[in-house]
Amino acid sequence: MSVRRLAEENVQPASFAFNEQNAIWAEATIRKYPEGRQQSAVIPLLMRAQEQDGWVTRACIESVARMLDMPYIRVLEVATFYTQFQLKPVGTRAHIQVCGTTPCMLRGSEELMDVCKRKIHKDPFHLNEGGTLSWEEVECQGACVNAPMVIIFKDAYEDLTPERLEQIIDEFEAGRGAEVKTGPQIDRWFSAPAGGPTTLLGDEASMGGTASGNAEGEGASVPPSNAARAKTAADETNPTLKTPATAPAAAEANAKAAAGTAEGEKPAPESGKS
Image 1 (cartoon, rainbow, N blue to C red):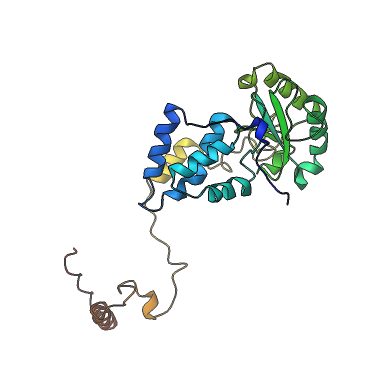
Image 2: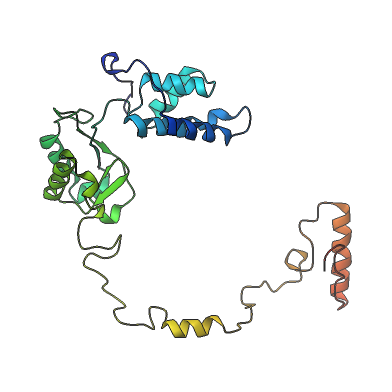
């Protein structure tokens, strides 16, 4: 685990303020929490600030602390604890997070990092010469079946080769990042097998039947099954008893219902219910 510190003073802006739209959002977010519990909004506010400016600045932390009436050190603790918060400037067009966890490593993530070192900077958390690109190695991003992968801002790019990542970086550098296809970069539908389905091909019965057959089945009356119903006379499994019976009145009602059930009588309906 590494120590995380704020960026050097020479890159820190003098002030921070949410833009008009984000300021309205921040006020609405704070109001979601009960009086005296507004500090719970610290993570959402820091994340929105990062989305606005690209990274979390010292001025941002101070501003959020004032908004939530929190000590500065408490907001700083949150910002430095979670690695999702960028504490240094990142690329204005792309910040590439390369997954280096075992599945991606086995599938070639080290080669992807070599691409980033060659095209952006030899070290992570450093900007390229134009200040438009940066990169870092991160832990699992949750798409192991499509390894190796990267995340750029909020979008995932999966099933990557070094050549394809080079193309993606070039597109973002040219300002055409919005045109790059997200998700799997090969012939795959989300996490389905590469190249398409390999089983249940053309077998409608295995796929749940035809549309007309499904419609007919939905209208059929199927009685409930008792297969999993416990075969016991214990009060805990008696459907006529109120549970839990913590109050004396409820206990008395349960006793009457149990007695009626034992004698073969239909339990009387509860007061106020049909």
